[in-house]
Length: 458
Ligand SMILES: *Cc1c(COP(=O)(O)O)cnc(C)c1O
Image (cartoon, rainbow, N blue to C red):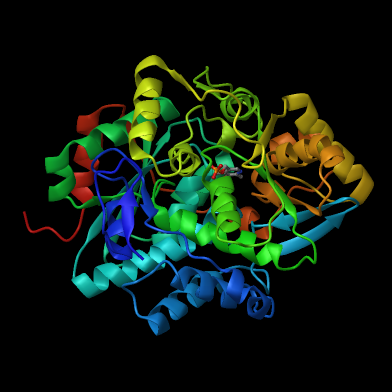
């Protein structure tokens, strides 16, 4: 499989090139040159367990890692999950919950980042290279990225987060990791400051090349690829093609579902659930993509206005017309809004926004009725599914993106007596923690990197 940029400036990359490149130099995102058609395999694949299907699906996208090595990396990545078949299931009346949070940091991001860390380790080892990963997090990504690469010889990881503004448990998931290659950097500023610092440093191509900086955010193709698997796997459990309702922030998770459907997995339709940051819900209703102000909600991982993976979706929506896509993205970045001629065809996706009250009600109702606890992100998806289910004549699957114990305050606010604990998180309290607190300047971030980056003799 070869990879190209959504903006047409890069083509013919191998998988490993795409893995290491992250964002394309023309500002676009990397996508496979063609999507494989899985329909001839489906009957055979119904018999596989999760790891078996992951090995088959991922091999379709990887042309330059040999199959036995790839199979081993995939098996090792998913053996870290505490569910015997990696993902869990819960049946609630008329919706089924697909639990993606059984990995080491209890968020669905582990599915991609456990594999990404192992892919990096393998590729860097073969090439005798060292990589310094720089990432910014408002919560879940940092912990999952650290868990994916901790202890690796060829990687140092630097995670920026806003000092005092990530939840205490999420901070502990990062700062209590004792491995010497992990560097937690608390920036005296907001999450937006962290993200712009990161972007500025990646834009300094000289610094980026000298320190071999790499990215783990969801622009990395390998993350999307790993997420395709669970939609395919879930679709094969049903006799009739299911619909998926996906709580959405950066559009990475639901975009993977879109690709699974395009590849021929039996999927009825895709339902996008947003919180009050409803840019995507407005887009699917009207065709207008317009930036708004960021609202802070109970589902912080979805407090995003501009979803980076949306560009990949538009690339397919525009039938790979890179000129039309560039025009749309340029209009959006210069004016803050861009439009299609009308609402997008509902066969692609439908979307709805869920407010705080509906989110709390979902947690409370599900706890009362089923004695089951939703995290606030999953609750957004569940509340949206209640809206959609009247018009959907297919099994309805709600995607659970985090374990409720990661967000105990929101859970308790909705249902005071709902349990919101997990032994993995309980064990973090009281452990020694490390972080470096710095001012929100490019110089300060660069200083941390130059002081700690290994693999350089300069
Ligand atoms: C990251 C995250 C999301 C949003 O996923 P996207 O791929 O950005 O749409 C939703 N829920 C949780 C718990 C997350 O960590």
